[in-house]
Image (cartoon, rainbow, N blue to C red; front, side, top):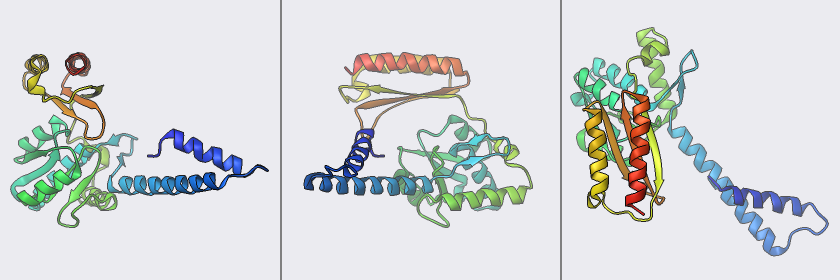
Length: 253
């Protein structure tokens, strides 16, 4: 996405071009370059959006990628189309999805964040279904990348087969409350080198008692530590995430 300063500059140059003064040769070149960058940005964003699937049920509730993967995994297991009953997703997928797969005789294989890691694991393990919480679903029997239209057709197929509304089908999975916090950091030290962080994580994990998760990871593009906490009690999850954010900010200054 193009930043606001560049968009403001595009508008400024466009306004000046309509005045009697007009644009200088340098400004014309700048305007052309900015317009090209803007078009590339729009096309890139559109392509990324087409990779993902956004589904809303008849009551206006938005279904996330984890709910869609649970729905598709169950249908594919019933048809015998999911080798090893394996679903591939990233570390960001909700714990409820992992529990769902286990309770239905399947397994959830987690990867690092990013669809390329999901695809790599799918190829390595021979898995036929994978995706991300964002709604990026990969049906390897049809495609080796996310395809929003393909995923939408698969959802419609399940609705037709089950003859049930989407709201009822989506009830297969109730995600655990999840809180994400981004903390700006000055250092990107391995977390195990900061005992204070390890102790804070251990305290939270003890409180969660196996019914939740804590995940810390660095952003691949920004000076940020991303903290994710999920559990059954939303209020406690928010408190745990805020506490961890304070510790991380202090330890990585």
